[in-house]
Length: 113
Image (cartoon, rainbow, N blue to C red; front, side, top):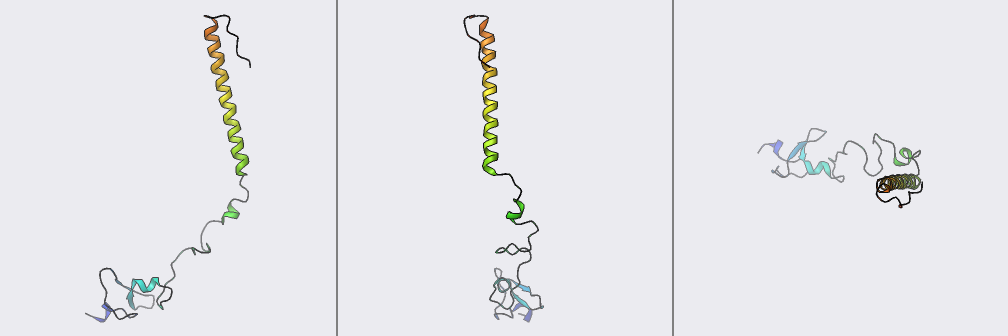
């Protein structure tokens, strides 16, 4: 075993599950040492901070949704439009049925608009 196969942080050899990598300072250490913030070989992960969101390329939610429409108002509008379309479809189907059967049964009253 050469010296490059021994971890300088703990003195143990590399195993298949605990491999050695070259740290920023060029020393060979187990990967787990670079992931442990208590280790002197800890390398902070690149990218956004998961706790604060700093470094993330998108605006924070309060900024992104500042001009978004009010959700309940939008939902009420969608329901109102859906109801109006359902009523129109029912009225159209009713008037079609009334026209169809009025030839056979002339006493059937026509649907109200």
